[in-house]
Amino acid sequence: MFGGNKKNKENGKAKQVTKSATAISGLNSLVAGTKVEGNIHASSDMRVDGTIKGTLVCDAKVIIGPEGAVEGEIRCANAVIEGKFEGMIVVKELLQIKDTASINGKVYYGKLLIQSGATVTGTFSMGKPANGTATNGTATQIAQSKTKASDIARKGKEKETVN
Image (cartoon, rainbow, N blue to C red; front, side):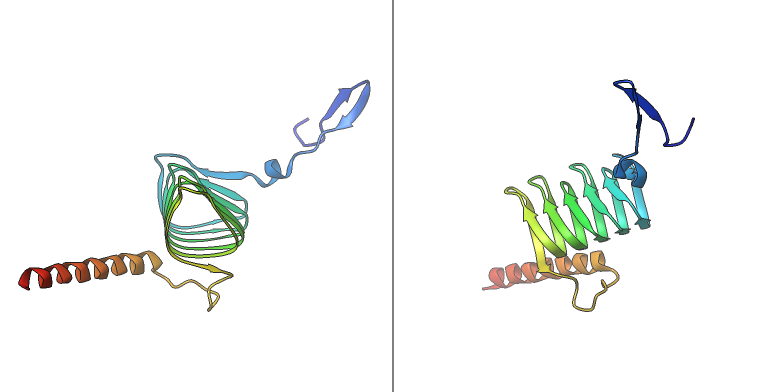
């Protein structure tokens, strides 16, 4: 009555109805307007249309939608990036970067597909990080790098005005 053993009659014969792999494993979804700070671990696919600041570990596929944003660290089997990502991402298999994506940080992947129009900045490496683990505070390190770069640029302008 309530289980997955439903039978449909088709052409007068009973037919077993099975659930798809997606229905069984499920899809986690963070909808637009939702903000999460902290650590998330998902065993099935994860779609982000809201904002995550922290660490996302997913045993399956991570999808960052066109309005989605993640700042921090992602570790997953597969990923599709359509929105914004800043930090460090480690994708064991296929990383797809769509034309609407904006990525800034350290990217590790098994296979890579980048569509024309995507904005990518940072380091891209095939395989996993050399030490096998990510450094904590990757987003902080990127922010510090940006600050150092702006300080260098400002000092360069100061020298120009002195000369």
